[in-house]
Image 1 (cartoon, rainbow, N blue to C red):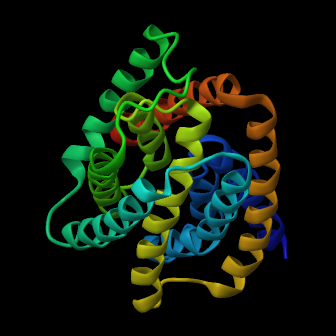
Image 2: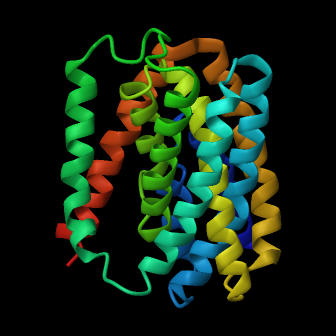
Image 3: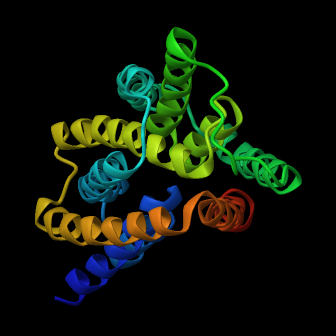
Length: 254
């Protein structure tokens, strides 16, 4: 019973953070590993996806009602993200992700410093591209980050947000809204693979999914109320936390 309470609360908080800027895995994945240290990692990752996919999907729906999204660019990008997620999941069965694990804190550090240095980055929504060019670039982002999510995963939402801001010229609110659709696609591809292999505890995942959606609703409302400036600050905080977490995992835990 205690496990259900803890994972439900962790899933609610993860959905809240995910809805604003991504990074809910910082909360839910460690909670699952702490509660079930003897479980197969694939099962815990699969159970996490079984909950988080619903929160990101709900956030996408909520954002789409209040924010004008470029669907002609995002729909092909979501398909590319779905394909990238499958390719990444396959690739991790063939090669080790150890090199990427050690490089990730430095990659996130560069994103963090760049965002701090460019104080106007993502404050104004001025799309750099339109039509086919925007769709192509969005699809490339979806494919690459989708592959990363399937292959390794931490910080996927933050990478989507940063690239939508930097490459496509979105403000942080539109970037976060757009990222939710692509993150839903990558979560769905991973969940499909985990479920196919029997690595989802559905009795936990279904309860966590409800909590994740509630957290997503709260986070989305907060982001829409306070706008791009608030999302930018939240992005910096989450990326900073990701740097500490991935740095510890890569260099401190051993």
